[in-house]
Amino acid sequence: MAKAQDKEAKAEAKKARRQASRERYKQLWQAFQMQRKEDKRLIPYMIGLFVLIVAVFVVLGLVFGSVWLLLPLGIVLGLLAAFILFGRRVQRTVYTKAEGQPGAAGWALGNMRGQWRVKQAVAGNAHLDAVHRVIGKPGVILVGEGSPTRVKPLLAQEKKKAARVVGDTPIYEIILGNDDGQVPLSKLERHINKLPNNVDGKRIDALEGRLAALGGRNPQGPGMPKGPIPGNAKVRGMQRTARRKS
Image (cartoon, rainbow, N blue to C red; front, side, top):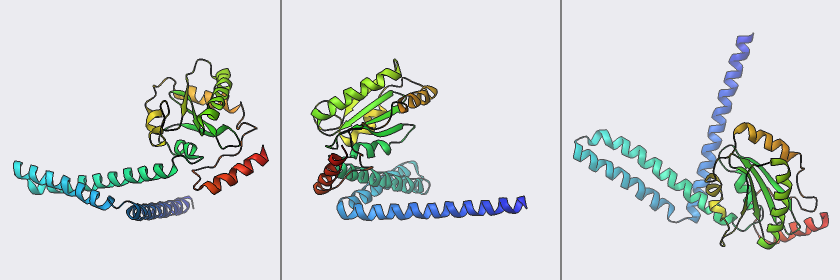
């Protein structure tokens, strides 16, 4: 009986993996089609990069007398390079569209790779300015998005609250933007990853528990969107809703 159940469970797991794989390929194809329509240089660049890499390996093969040995390697690396180029151009398009939209920083932080503990909109106001909190090996990172003149007091308030419970753990402040002293949305993850490692995994767990005890969102602030909001009309609508809640 147990063996039959195990066999059935393995079959279900295999079926689920196949379904997930099909979904990933479907999403990838949809992303390619969307990017191709908006980015007219995508396909020429991908083909050009592929041909260039294959040509380099063909030349190396001719030099060393092993064309048929190096050609398959060149094809594989050419396809890989073209795929990486596609991913980077998609990412750039996504960040370009998201930049300047309320919720963009929280969305970007939520999609960071690595062991980061992200809490979106721990502070905010009726203008949809917000402060997001990230806990990781650098310590505590507070990311503000919105008008700098309104975000700076929110950051100072949140830093003061966090400092009461994190001890000597470093607290970093980041303001999203393109002006001096600010970090563009497209470089936010890279900027955070360059911060020095100051705490270990066990301490990260402790920090998360202490900060969670402070409570979540500022009671005067609205609920922030889970991702960038397209369109000024929708932003105005959310602002009206936020003001009614405040």
